[in-house]
Image 1 (cartoon, rainbow, N blue to C red):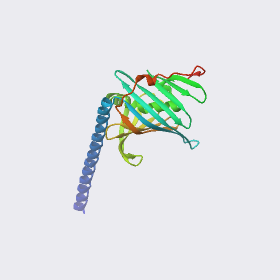
Image 2: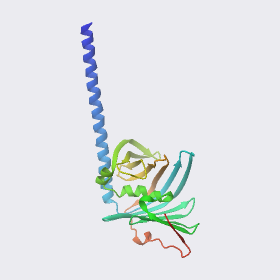
Image 3: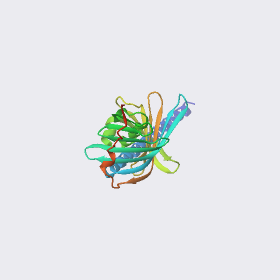
Image 4: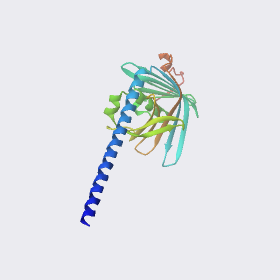
Length: 233
């Protein structure tokens, strides 16, 4: 009986050893995948000189179980040693234009004849769409310095596009508690989902991307009609 017990304990110890080894091996594999995703993001960021894309944004309120969807086109132009220039032209459900220049945003609402000005980091409503482009402009070192990053796995966006699903948790005070990034094999973040403290979520998806095309800086200069009402955001 004692011999059987000893054999049983030895087998259990061996099982624990290999289980721990397998767990460490899996952790190493996940770490390697995460490093590869961040490496490709950095390479893509350095190679990207401009971007034109379709954009879709879905804001969801879980308390009311209601969602609001906007769609349109976006233009993104990185500028050396400065924040990128961003312009989004929403076409549905209403016509709106968002520009982000030097960390300041402007939202022009054609139907209401009003323009909202404010800091990009404090943008609300349709202005939240600049979040994804802000992540695109961050270096690998900036991402690591500001966020705790986890690889949640590999997933397909829109059912067809293979991506790495990354979870970013801010290390400092932020407008959101977590953000998920879906990064394709080229290192391009094509979808983001930000969760706020009240559990509201904003999901932004890019599609039909045209990279490194010629874009004039002048399109980011929003010329407002004289009868536009100015509102501070």
